[in-house]
Image (cartoon, rainbow, N blue to C red):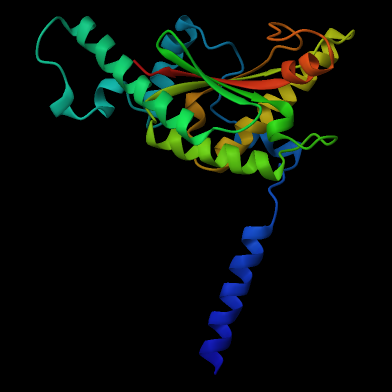
Length: 227
């Protein structure tokens, strides 16, 4: 009887845990979760500079992540490496595209990189600065794919709609980006892969009407091969 009660209690606790909505940790702890992340744009130069830190933190390069049997045995190394990276990122793109067919989310290619656009209302509470239940599900899906395709760097960039106060816009956009970064860190993504920035109202992707403003409030994930 006691064993049955223990089993029943475990099942109930597991069910309750599954129903608990995710909430970002206290802001004062964010620096701990984001230790190892870079708070700068993910440029070619910044990736090169970060590479030793990334490798030292257990990161791996694309050519090390691909099955040796699929590697090319002809052409020079640079050509082969580019072909391997392109194939790796194309597979990653398809995985994200298939898993993220939801309103407010899009997956695009930008050269070798893959860009995931997450409209704010698709991942965050309507009137609260925190991850929503839907956002938790979406970010959990992305996390699983990023873990599988782990030979990549990830830029997490927050954006707002047009605001009079540029400093406030940058602060709000950085808040969104950091919350996503903290979520990834909590769920096992290596922070040495991360670049986190808040770009305010820069780079709008829609007009400034009501619908456009909602679209411009977003987080963009730019995923690049680690080479």
